[in-house]
Length: 353
Image (cartoon, rainbow, N blue to C red; front, side, top):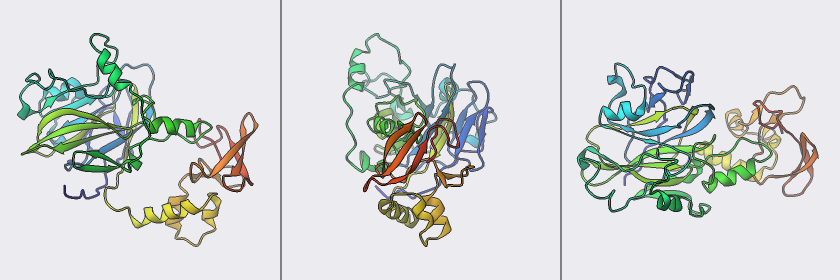
């Protein structure tokens, strides 16, 4: 398959009436009610190109979660964006949307699903919607298949047919804090609910024969299978993200497919050999690159530089000093570097280093 050119992903300026985009066009927040949160990608997706979002915030009290999919309808053609992606948008035709649930998102193809049921293949056949979350009738086999032991990823790329997607951006990370290292491991094994904060969910389509494709949903680095088959590719396909119900805010995660940029390679090389973030400020580097490496730094009333996380997960060790503070030690030599102050970061639940 031809290499996928990296393009900066943004949300389309046409979206549901309750959605507000930030100035970069990469964060979508539903500001009212539980519906009218349908968003689209600004540009059509290329074959094998993933549209990846991270759940930034949730809102308690609603039933239902994020919905993602594809549509062959140009957003500019809507006089009014549908209130719901399911069923309003899908009922219009040429749209395939998958409802993300806490469980049972993996598509199980059996003889019945592989048969003739589900409509004309040329119009796209939807194999799973992820909506029967609490359905106990006949769902035992599916439940067993989804609860099989998870393993840590060892391959640097996720492979779907002949498509390779870098894993480093597919898996979410928790907010820096006391238990972040534990939560990060749970994200890596896909043990946390897909609807949790920091979970990363993407949609992609894979060419299958002449002018047809299958839609795949990817959750925290794991392919859920073909959730829709036989999607026509004669028209451009836009990503659909419905910021629905309990999902309050999502952010687009940019994915690099080819060689990493020079800036990214430099950042990784610097971070590999530096233990303490303050050391970056002392290096003779361009200010833009320092800022890129120092992106967790934030202003604080303390006279010392303040950060929300360490430069690498294994760069430090911690010892509890008080109920609200940890002594931070060098992960290599064990010398003291400073402290981690719980809940003293720029946001609630975020530490200050």
